[in-house]
Length: 377
Image (cartoon, rainbow, N blue to C red; front, top):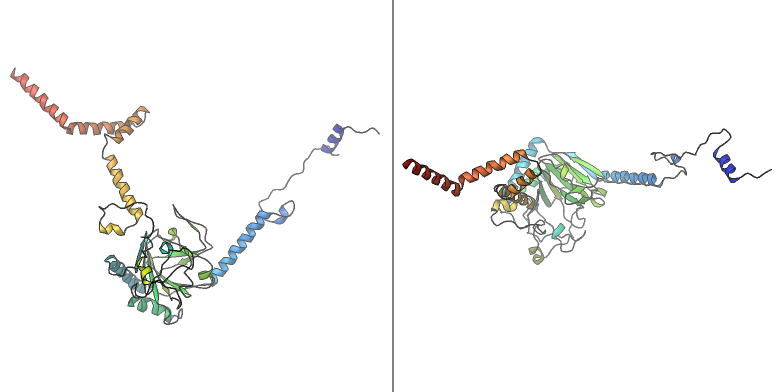
């Protein structure tokens, strides 16, 4: 039997007995089932499944450390909100002690009973470096907080009597936020109690913040917080995962009263060190110095607001001189065959300025003199 040539062998392989040529088709599927892949193993889908399982487990652990109860009625909320407005008025008058008030863009904090250093106030950054101020450096907890806020929570059995010795009022404007953090466990005992007023919001767990502009990653859990609702966090929710207030969750003014108990062995600053601490926002590097012409009422506004107003002033100044910078813009548009309406606008400004200029006024007077001379002749 004669041996087959290579060409005949290739033709026999490509063409089976039925005479039809075919190729083995690969299977493609978006399913995460292992049976869909050729070898029964898809590392990417397995990673996604494991990550989703971890996320659900983290969510479950977080939920076990959260307790919520609607405790305050509409009338009680209105009464407490009036007291919060009084605190803001007193702070604006400068009556409180230096470390009681801490201002930030779209959020102000008012410390009562106990205050502590955090964020950019710290000389050494990092968890565990927070310190309480010396005794007496912030104002005492107002009596109305004990009577109107703490007492109903104690009567409901949420915290024992005498538990609260620190109260903080966070006053948020629309778009205000507080970055992801964990309340220092070496400073504050658990649970952390908060009561929300003025409007509804949400508390997010497990977010990561990025800035300029502010963006947040997808949270592990978003907890709705209604007006008059009491929220307690402890365990995993307080110690093992961060919580924050995102800007998109503050659509109206919102205030929260945070009630905590400081640990007996919590570290404190010495009086000399505490005198060097400035409020957190004042300690930051500001991008632009304010103009000395700003009034005292504007000094409490955020840097972003002052920059916005100065930009508007520059914008008005630039467009108030149509014969300088804007004339060049109109001329360039005319050369390119654009801006027919701009041309008429420029000529209108030109006529107006020519008519008001001393040169043209003197010219009109000289013309009238020539006419008078002609009449005399």
